[in-house]
Length: 176
Image 1 (cartoon, one colour):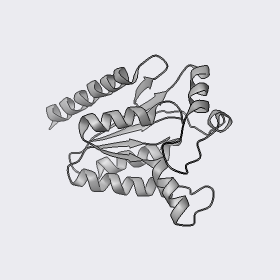
Image 2: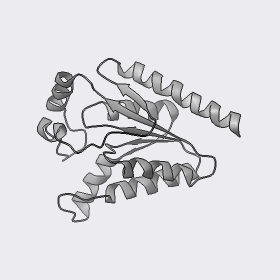
Image 3: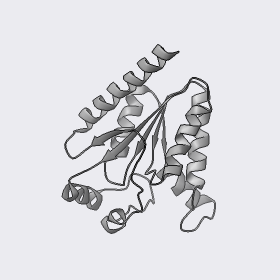
Image 4: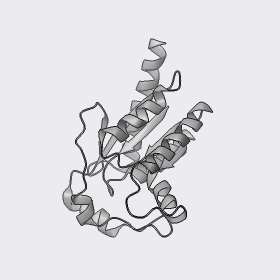
């Protein structure tokens, strides 16, 4: 199974993603880390386009083929990136996915988080509140679990996601 965490920077995707990955003993794939490595080591300048997502999809596919669950952490600002994760799961017989949009509906809290963040990737330049608040982010039309971190602790958010994972697994078992 692939659990895809999407949302703007500073909403809590990474904190929640790492916790879910640890709980599930899942491979953890963070597009920020992949894009940062591509910029540092392969001569990409500025916007690297879809390259980071292409690498992430390949890593996710390899892990799913080995039977490893995957937690994917990325902004997924457009339908194409969201659909890419689904295609990865659909390409492997019997695999399923869970889309989770992580939001922080309290704008003051979201801004505080963005402005007070400390980079956990060496040399990574964190986005500013200006870049986050003006980020192109196409609204979702697909079904997904929405996790609002302005009113849920990390523990509660992980518990909510875990319940949804179990529901997906149960549904898959019932229809197999």
